Length: 248
Image (cartoon, rainbow, N blue to C red; front, side):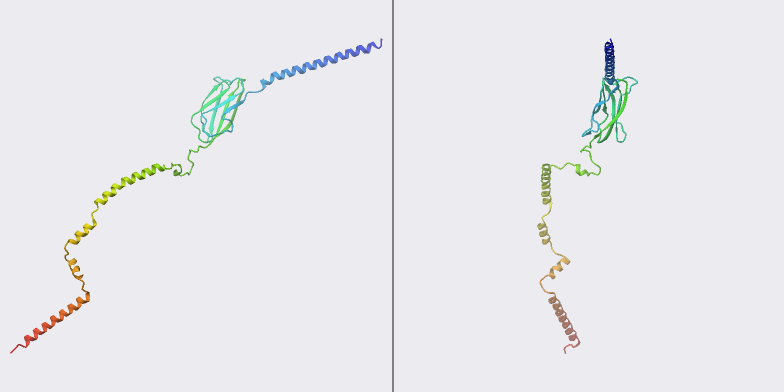
């Protein structure tokens, strides 16, 4: 009889341990299931794509800003604000009207963006009612066509076409040739003018100058004059003597 009592006690203890293990396993499974089901409810929607992308460097201005979010769509309504704001370094706004289509938020730019840095700020209300405000930046590269400060106007001028320049030079040469011929025809013949002047009679001082150029040297003229004066003086002296001493 004493050997049967321990056997019954051991069986009871084994059944109790098995029940405890089963209860613990069920509790763990239930907790895991609750955690798995609650995980999606705890995660909020977020931005998953944008155009342009954050920190992008664009070679030309985009036409619009587009943001795409996770989830089934944004919450809309009269009291719900979903908006995009685009500002430059000086704080000037460039965005247009914000449009919501499902989980996508977009705005067309009012004008083409000049080169510089820009900030895209947005506020959205997700499908679970959670609101979020975030921002990111991008850059528009400076256009090569835009003149830089201090640049010479001659640097932006187009070089003349060599063929056009040569054609213009030939046209100017042809137009100048008739003008030179007319000037030549209108100019009087210098040789004819000299001949007419030579045929005109010489008078006054011009005649005296011509006579002095007869070929006699100056000293011969002076000596001749002295001789003539001496002869005249001798003749005058002889006449006076003849008058004082008349013949008998």
